[in-house]
Length: 459
Ligand SMILES: Cc1ncc(COP(=O)(O)O)c(C=O)c1O
Image 1 (cartoon, helix red, strand yellow):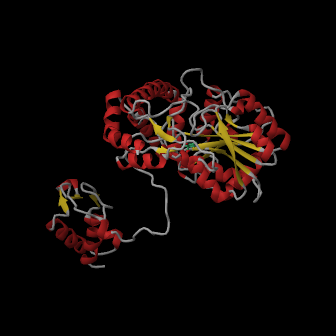
Image 2 (cartoon, rainbow, N blue to C red):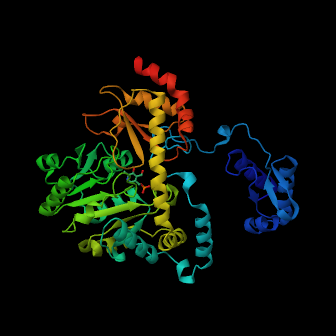
Image 3 (cartoon, helix red, strand yellow):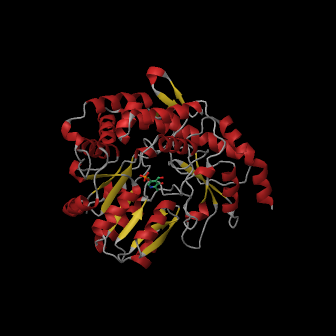
């Protein structure tokens, strides 16, 4: 390899945005050894890159991509254009009113940093090998203890299987326990991404309507009593945020016991309940071990952590253990170790408590701002918890156009009707409020869409 090729590679990486202004590049000697070329070859390439203004040399501090570099456009130098035939849902990295994320300004950075340092320094040699498939033992212990104390459960750490979150939970549960054509039930409306995944991996998928008391278990028994799996969000239904009523909880458990079916409880944001005491998990009423409880740290800590878990019923332990070893590799150990310490030192409890108070205030601020900006346009059926609200529109009004309008202004709301699988739909916007910092800020966020929203509604 000659200096021209090294020069061209760097230039391409910078123009494509993969290397950013300020990024450090390897020392000449290190790169020469890595590429197995003479030092002079790398030196020449670096000299040209410095000469053209792509790199700056900072003496003992090394060489960096020029921090003052401003690139006009990176579009033309992309090496591989994305395929046009695949349409993926857009997942925004910025924007307001996003659903399903915790308060990013509330993340306990200082504590996290402190614990991260300690965890990394104390990494033992056996912890540097392949991580255990079912999860880092101290984290399994900390999760079991948290669930037993906070969610009214009674688990052994051996029952906790740590995964990368909701989708991994569903994939694993079905891979271990389902026969290819088993009937799987999902709520309608139901979590958009859950529905997308299940359409792919569960060919015999059916839907059960949801009303003010949660999943309609009468409907389930009338039309789908033969189902093998029912996936529910009993604490705060996703997206309507209603809680499954106590009679329905018992009815659902009785059905699962009689039919030998599994209930998958998705307790994604059960921690955030405001006006009453935290609702115990459905699992806490499950005398016959028919509920597979699943949870995530995406709502309590951050989605980027990618740590979730499922709790294996006793009778399934051997099957999960055997197949888990074949299908999974275990999550990276260090983040698990940090999280374990965060939980076992009690910071997690304090953090949730703080967020619960914060979210309650933020929800109120957003509701007031919506009412002030769009008087009477939306109806709310407020429930006791959750991390988002549904702003209902009158029957028949198309929410997709409204959501598209808001999204053009970087307000990441979703149209409620898009979460329904069957024809009986309700309409509205599903709106996250956890990152609203004041009433004024909420008003400012809504202001750019105010006039167009009212015009659209009158058209
Ligand atoms: C209904 C529901 N379940 C589960 C999750 C958690 O997903 P994950 O653990 O993959 O981040 C979410 C996140 O938005 C959700 O809305």
